[in-house]
Length: 36
Image (cartoon, rainbow, N blue to C red):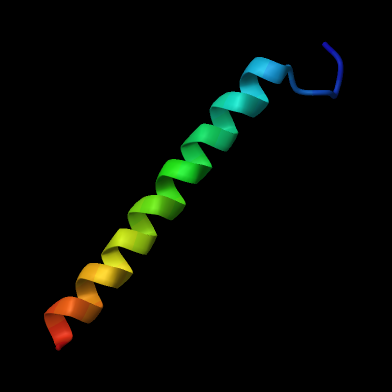
């Protein structure tokens, strides 16, 4: 096995990271709305 990750794995990780950051962003926005 090489050290390089396959393109498929990188895409999957990127997708997961994007979803997580999106969720975090939504939580921040919702939190700000609730605080107001």
